[in-house]
Image 1 (cartoon, rainbow, N blue to C red):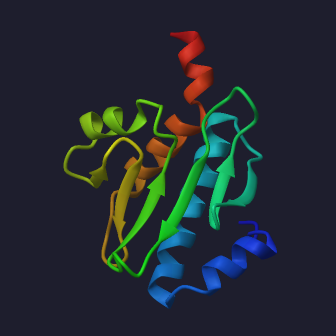
Image 2 (image 1 turned 30 degrees about the vertical axis):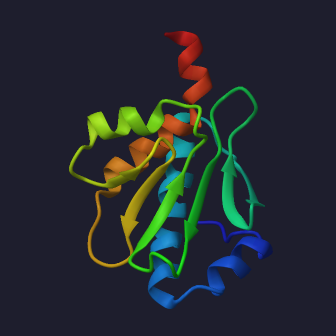
Image 3 (image 1 turned 90 degrees about the vertical axis):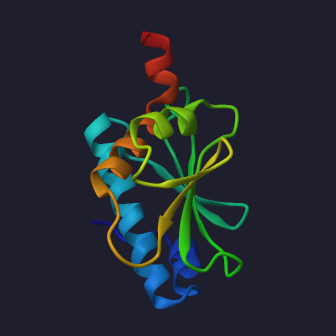
Amino acid sequence: MTQPPAEIAAVFAAYPPPVQTRLREMRALILAAADATGTAPLEEVLKWGQPAYLPARKMGTTIRLAWSDKAPDVCTLHVHCQTDLVGRWRALFPDEFTYEDNRTVQVPVSGTFARAALQQMAGMALTYHRDKVRS
């Protein structure tokens, strides 16, 4: 797997080691989803100080990853609040994750999590606009 750009690596490095590990795992699943959906390569940048993964224009929506010491036991995956993605994810994966509002998925920092589900969710985000046009 490719290394993140220096600015993304610096953000990861500022977090506690377990958080770094989980965010890197989540990043790997996002990149794997991009490969699987034909949306790779993604643009990997910082948005609001958080690692963000942008598919080609008109293909999908941006995915951001974050962690905060205000909720130290979870990492979060964010999508644009005007999509219906989180509602769809709640319906598909009601017990696998905790969801906040219409933009956030919580992933525990430690222990197991539904990796295949998260990769599928990332794929849905990365193809959000492309798939809306087809339906």
